[in-house]
Length: 113
Image (cartoon, rainbow, N blue to C red):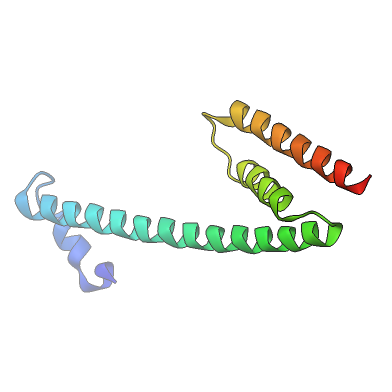
């Protein structure tokens, strides 16, 4: 659209470090950052809703398998640690996941006997 209006041709004839062209470039950078942030927010929102839906389906599955409320809470915490990955704390997260799953398994087995 800017090409059709002749704006780009006009700007290309100006000094690269000139005031008009620098302001235009600065405005484009700011606009691009705003659009990028909007896209990131939209993607985060979509990912959040997708993960929430997946968690709710997992909860219903766990409930149908016979887990009680406290076990489901621990399984939910373990699942959230595995679903959202953080590079810096990945090792600790894996240990916590295994610990929580072991506690739930032991609790479930003790109730079933």
